[in-house]
Image (cartoon, rainbow, N blue to C red; front, top):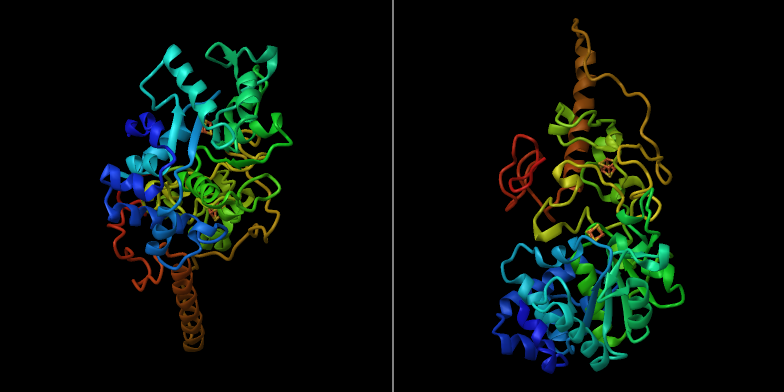
Length: 405
Ligand code: SF4
Ligand code: SF4
């Protein structure tokens, strides 16, 4: 992994050359390209191909983009998400696909050695490197709450951003303030775009964000010098086009009025909708519901039984209390009352029995359609209620093995 950080002399080699030199298998690279295609099914020229082989053929010719990664007021979780992949060699592969020239968390050097490495990298790749910023920038009291090499983050950002070819703000902190900017925030923490409003900046919010979004943006820029189409909050549309609520596997429960009322209750174990627990899915745009973390099915907040907190929305995360119920803006709100499920016992006429039979048949059909619609496995032909192929046994809580409440 650290080999990437001492490979400055060969940073501008192509990805194919680098993988060959480092003995990375073709198969690993194809798996990586498949993951990239799933994370960015449209909106990026590099993944607009029909097979992983075609994506690999195109990406292999791309010159590895030099990246300088600055950590400001952060927890390094955004770096962890890049490295904690489920395939053992993926962290290494990712660091071979890009050329990470400076990254405080991963590099061995410290003190003057690190400072020198940063100066050299900025000078050597001036006008060519992609600047990735993690964490907020404190602005109160001349920025004294975050210093790097003795200089306030404010100064460092101002200086280094002017020499970068493109800037990516990784995580909710760097995008617009994140946790450090939550009340009462004595440091005046802001995001990169707040300080550099005229610069071309890509925001990749999330806490942490999906690493493939970052890789997609960086590789696209390295391939043809373009940045992906962005929304009004500077988020790449290919990754933030979706409303969590519209693509949530628990949506059928929302529509039917089946809600979790308390953690650990029967509804929670039956994987019902988390709306009443404060789920911000109806107000949140992100790809989490379809692009799970670490390539593990169901590894995302709602998948493990926690409500969505709205980390990718500036006006939601760390602004709206965690358990406060959000308003439903874009779709019909859940009804306030539902038909009772339990009925009193009594004598049923043959006509009523026939009508009930027709109704039950329709409901079973609808339920089957819904389970197919929300199945996490494409073309899943398994019967409703059974585990989709390859997903492992269903636990008592309704979650797949490997995930827990
Ligand atoms: S966005 Fe979240 S994971 Fe990333 S640095 Fe901030 S607190 Fe940590
Ligand atoms: S409210 Fe949350 S848990 Fe319920 S369907 Fe919407 S996104 Fe899913």
